Image (cartoon, rainbow over all chains, first blue to last red; front, side, top):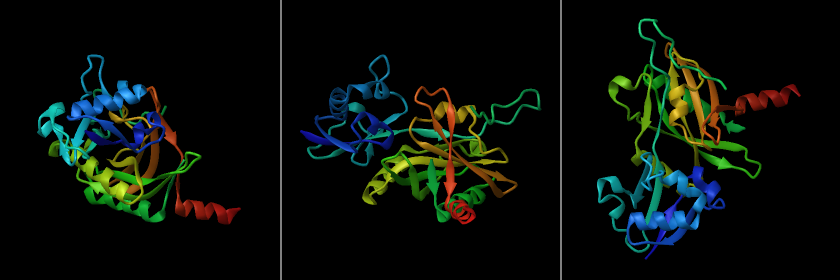
Length: 109
Length: 151
């Protein structure tokens, strides 16, 4: 079944700047594996050394996060979209404990 | 370089002040031209999904919000080119935690908010090997006009 992978901007350097590509796959896992097979340089950004999807990567089938469905076994209907969504976080450092140690703030390379 | 219009800059500053003393966060929607220059056309504020007691020094964006931002950007012919967040009573420079959590390519705009008033604003980009957060030149439209007048 043909599904469309929607690629976040950060990963388009590995897909010849394409924002979406069509692959074959009946589940979310199959679709992502087919995508990684088509663009091997992207594999390390999606999978860890054990071949598991990296923890900060979320996969959506349509508008549903597969973590809230059947994971990578989540079925993908023909013509549906599969989106790769990275987790985003950050923030200033915690305040020092009673001034006993400096925090890790403000690092300018 | 990343270009920010006056309206966008004001919007980021207003968000930082609105959520003080917590950190605010959101998406930068825009375009990247062939020379690699980035232009922010709009921002998309989202709730800081961090735990309530952590929001004064941490932010987290829900994957669902990212999914919706990506879809909205595509519908508008734009891309998610980065994120903004505030540092309440703290410099507009990335923390080690910022670096650890960041992804290459994206612009990370940081706004300092001091005693509830927005202060300096800066932009940063993670190096490809994740080792450094490099300062990215941020040009606001108002500054751009002022510079043109001087010359």
